[in-house]
Length: 329
Image (cartoon, rainbow, N blue to C red; front, side, top):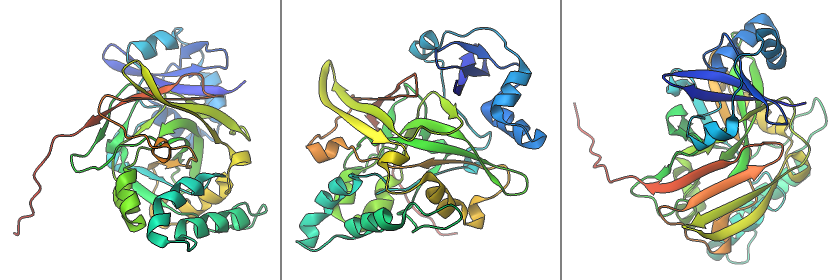
């Protein structure tokens, strides 16, 4: 039975909550955050599951009620958001090149686009044999922990954004141990959220299109990810469903293995700094923008997938314009 960890608000404090496949949930006594629990597991040389079992069971929690009341936050946070690195990879899923290729085809004519070349490299070398290193994927930086929002919170586009589009996917959560070893804590649902119109203008603007908020689902799924994860991505405008498509993830539906994506992120010393958290988005092949959808403020993004029991829901908003000026000293 899979273990899920959540962070739930009770009055003025946060509690770690453990949940099972059936939705039964209880407070994990003795820990104020999942970050604290994970740090203790590393220090004691125990798994998260063993440490949760050792802690015993606190009060029962109705997770559906807590979610409806807005009391479930991010599945993990760092006390200093600057030490929570948010990054990801694209063109990692079977079919993921189609939408990107359409965006860039008009500028490239009939030539094979760089996106398609990158995707094909992944198909040919993204799943190396055990002990080998595969081809490196496309990689991007999104920000730090200050750009992450939780379930029910708005996803806010910058005032200068040309688009605010959903990206339904899975993300891995990692904590760097005292000796620089990355520990994978588990996986969560995610909405990576990008500006696809800016990216469409020139694929070299991909970096700009990614520098904005992203959301993480309520549950941190501990342990291994199923080979195939099947979910649904939908957008509601008021009471009308304007987009509703399945999305697939898990290694059976990917051109890269998760191990290969992890290697090419953590091979950099900068990303093995003790005590840092990392969230790494694994990519998607399902985007509403490739189906002609133009999102608007107030649109509601809903993402759900098994084995996650609770959905990830966020509403699109836009930030007010903030003048920026640089002063010489």
